[in-house]
Image 1 (cartoon, rainbow, N blue to C red):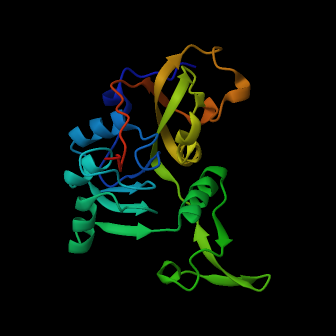
Image 2: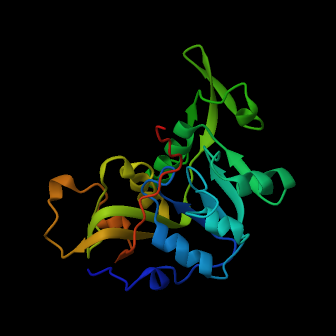
Image 3: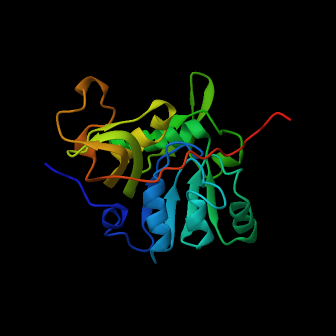
Length: 230
């Protein structure tokens, strides 16, 4: 089955206001930048975005944030975006902050069909307000519900036309688990190859989880914080 689409513009067909969308990546590593850029040009708004962070002011999800397309962010780290801080403090942006491991497991559980699980992280803090708690082995745990999305947008190093994906090094991060948790998964890849060229032993995400795939272009290797010697 050939799941290839021409480009990011074709890949985002069907996006509507108020949808829940997952975006892979960690910081600026492994983010689906072509798809994010195309979405920033679209008129879609009111999105609930699930991502480890929200990019920076002029790159990644920061572009959509500047356009006021995001209604709510579900994240674990948001410290590199001044506009994010401004919108959150002004009440323009709803924010749900989670421990990073809890966020990862909520996504993984959603992709695996597990509706909820107990985890100790966050008990006794603001994270636990309003959540059910229970003691296991003498330690209190919070009940966390799984996360799924209308669309999951991921970035891979290599992919084939059937949607099988290989991530490179730390760019695996949230991409692999998010690919399983979206009703429709869009994968942009640095290199798109015919079926049969990828070694099955090295495939991270089987193509069954991917509905649309395209080869991106003009990738920028951005660094969030650059420290140089004098």
